Length: 92
Image (cartoon, rainbow, N blue to C red; front, side, top):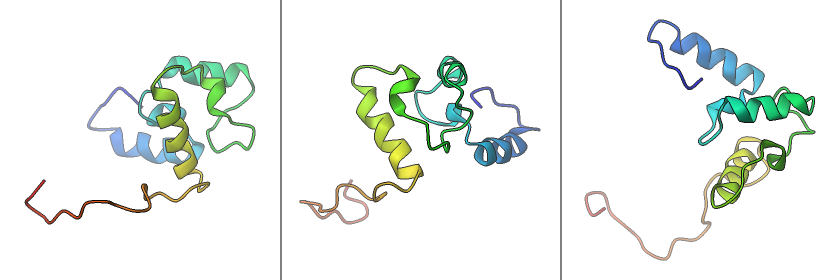
């Protein structure tokens, strides 16, 4: 999904969402897809999917893990649960 083409973008998006394409996610490339395929996993929606199988290390790992948890419905999509500062539109 990283290569854009105006004629096919909407169709590619539909297919990617239907099949759970991992390259739709931030910092996930085709090499990460191949790592999943090597482990017999074809979708991030697969119950056997685990972020550690992507081979992502370092500072991105926790962020990527949280993105997948939100999309799988495992955690609340609104984080943090409590804001310490209230902003009004135009201040930020």
